[in-house]
Image (tube, rainbow, N blue to C red; front, side, top):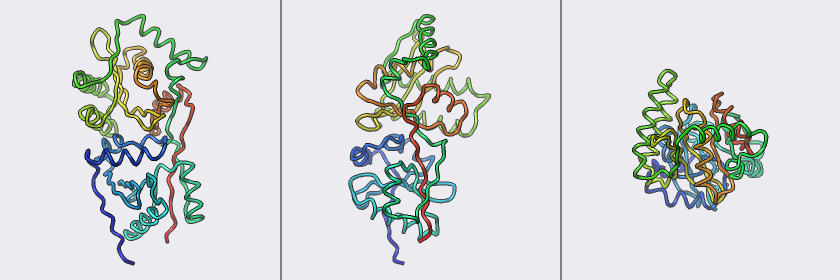
Length: 301
């Protein structure tokens, strides 16, 4: 078999414009479909990209070898997948594509029939909420959130402001203090996420991120960071608050959506990774969409 070589490269800041344009050609709601998310996690997952068949192609390191993502853009996706499948076969690996949505599944079954199967992992589903819900917190199920926020406002001399170049250093300092306060339960996964978080803040302007900062008596008690996913959805990548400040988490959530997300319809708050506490917290906001993302696994050619 003739080797079908594709020129893969590590993702860099210089790739932002063309990669973002490919994402704009679609309206995918999965949290990984934006440049910033791929960039800040690039070292953790070994993210590499290329452009072939008019599509953005990306791959990363998995536990059983290289894992690809669904081709993105208006190009020839079927041909692109066939080339990726060939490349995977040349390495002697099973061809896998992650973050497959329902529409992708229908296309793959149409193109490849019984040669493709799907594995679904609840830990990877995205939690998506309407901006209206996160702003107003109306209804019986969100009564507790409203109470926490009301109590926070009553008990504290507080104010909110957008994250920007002049307060991001203080946000970093708060993040390190937050880490120290959680030292008793710190683990390697938390350290990995923390390293990615600090990078997101340091490169805040270069990545065109947006964020919000919550103060009590001029001390930062919470902040959040994210980016536009598409025209109707904003994705929140990180949210940190002091657990001993009652209501700080729901307050930064609500304030950021109120001030920064009103031009969007949805907010994607990413997956829970199977963490029990995180799942409970995300479910407590009653997601409007629990976005299933599966792994496509292809039989040997």
